Image (cartoon, rainbow, N blue to C red):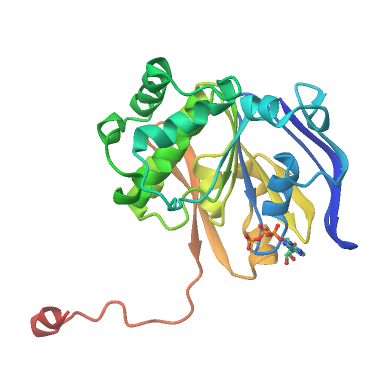
Length: 275
Ligand SMILES: Nc1ncnc2c1ncn2[C@@H]1O[C@H](COP(=O)(O)OP(=O)(O)OP(=O)(O)O)[C@@H](O)[C@H]1O
């Protein structure tokens, strides 16, 4: 269990986070929403122990992270950034094996056993066929899956993900989030920031809304995330519709459109050929 209790933080006396409290349990898929500059990344940096000067407590299984070494913390919690390019074109298997560094003794090198574990993590994510490819030569979705495999190899059961689907095409967004949801079903704790409130409806079982460094709404997305909340936070009018999506009831968000954009005007075949 990850618990954040009465956390506040400032950058040079400019208060950024105010009285943040929440818990995330095994199996939770917690989506953190909020407009640009709300403080989501700063909150992640505090939880990851990168900012130490905060007030309040971040604890894992009731142990304050300030009392843990970086290695101990990394064994419990992994960070998955947005897809990035490393300066060196490492093999995908090597990138995943880097997640095992926390389990190695000082100055020890990875062995065949570590490579096997890294390969198994790739298999778990369904991308073992990529093992020998250069990380700089695979697609954005494949890179994101590789970073998730690295976190899985790290054997940390709390995964912090900062907009993991930013820059991914529609199909890859769904493939990545489906995999993340499977990990939550296996008992991982997922804490993910996202700019798409629908992610909270479709994948999350809990949500936090952050505004100006404070949590202004928290709970079950299908109950708490309303048209009024989205209007207030993002300043846009939307309609929320309930749908039955296979096995589950969920909700979708549709922006309210003003006026007729001439969408029903049919295009002449010659116009198509110009596209
Ligand atoms: N190093 C810094 N020094 C001073 N202020 C900072 C620093 N980093 C971030 N801030 C400020 O802290 C506030 C919160 O920023 P943060 O990046 O945490 O927001 P966010 O919710 O992650 O935003 P986004 O959705 O745009 O990524 C912003 O007002 C930002 O300008």
